[in-house]
Image 1 (cartoon, one colour):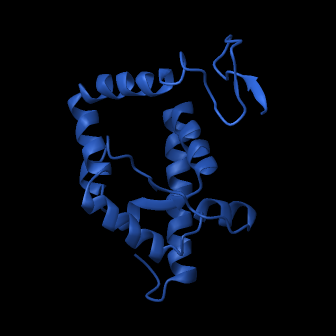
Image 2: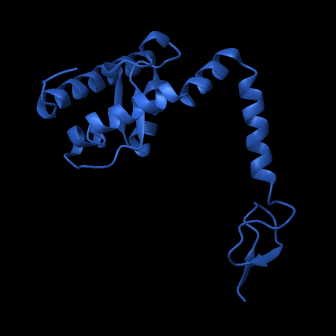
Image 3: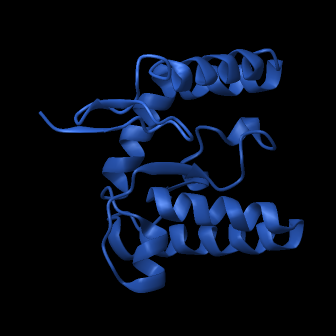
Length: 154
């Protein structure tokens, strides 16, 4: 049977090829995530936000946006012309700053994981960069609805 080294950094224990970690490190990542989640949930605003993202209302709203936006990454489509599946439905104006817009169709755009990270990187660069990116995203979303949705808008 094939063997390999444990994937935990610095561990040299030999294990079966289909296994990622040795017994000692198998639950380390899971425990780290649980502790991270426990700390995050102590913050009331973060707990409220996570509760929203786990709600039936968000699940239904997200499914409706996916259908309406044809399940594609709108940002990718208008920047490269490629059709890529949307894995995330991004709040252009984040719910931490605009809670009332959390279920506003004109504030949510379908994007791939890579573009979601790219957008958040831009948001974190500076206030000016964030506002510029938001303006671009709103324009793309509006254009998408004009180009592809029968009633011509949101």
